[in-house]
Image 1 (cartoon, rainbow, N blue to C red):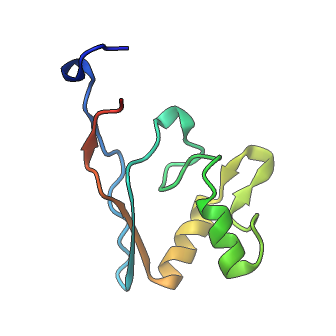
Image 2 (image 1 turned 90 degrees about the vertical axis):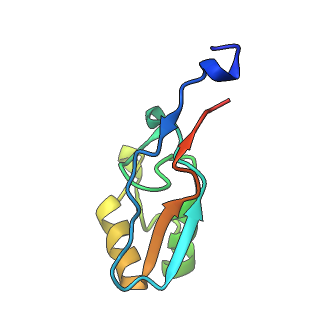
Length: 100
């Protein structure tokens, strides 16, 4: 691990903003986890992050609604369909970072 701040590499945000045409709500996060922690190529991809479980509970009374449990991944297509139907856009507040 680099010992000086200037030696730490800059990471560029890997995802484009998710902006459905009829979006009326923008949910802002911070920055995605390292890709080794991703279980899908989309926002809130870490299997240990409860975002999609909470959305499943809130909208479908089922915390597993967006999960593919045997695979330990999320159902990306179902999530995207849901976000479009509900008019929810996603992006993060940081476009580049240094992980400390």
